[in-house]
Image 1: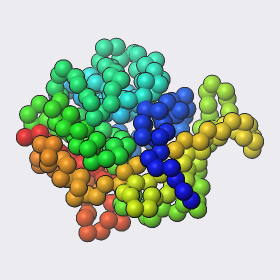
Image 2 (image 1 turned 90 degrees about the vertical axis):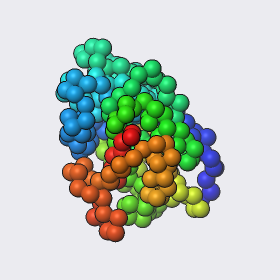
Image 3 (image 1 turned 60 degrees about the vertical axis):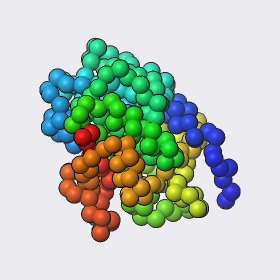
Image 4 (image 1 turned 30 degrees about the vertical axis):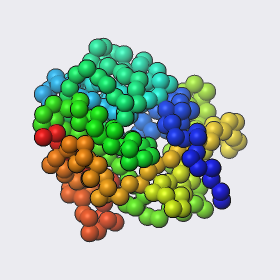
Length: 270
């Protein structure tokens, strides 16, 4: 299979998630495995009424839990459509919810934070070393001395080899706008000669077993090697890097990759 590379419709992740916005909550709101982890990290890092920088906040899946815990959240996302979906669900938190439509790599907020988080693999959308270094540097600049940056990822090298012959159902729910069942199916393949994975998401609106509507969305992820990741963090100025193997907080096992369910990185501005 020949892929057009670079794929113009996925270089800009904001365009990708614009197509997800209307149905994102239906498909992904049940994903809460990391919520307790990030809340615990927040409690250990910032004051009870402190302020947190969240990158890739989207429709507010994690944001609302941080707000409910009493924090103020500067919520950054490159997709205006995702932020528009977040606005009504988070309006009740008043000025503690502070949305910012911006690219992570060009972040310029006139304030500093004790904690920055980038949940649910958002850094995997940074497709070059330059983009990732710029983003890490921007985050570092927005942290106070001693401030903490935490993010998680699931690079291709961490899991089982992708099987591009399989189409797997990943999620389903009920679309409140139409009353139809929504089904998400995914197919993932690695790009030959590149540290990249391409995932095709097929979203079907179903009436019974019949497809009423279909959307095909292509998403690209970069599977950066761990040594390269740590070097970019070092170049951005981060120190005291800790690696966790899942959201329980257990150490990442570099020798037994199969025992890790996730790569979670916690680092600090000196």
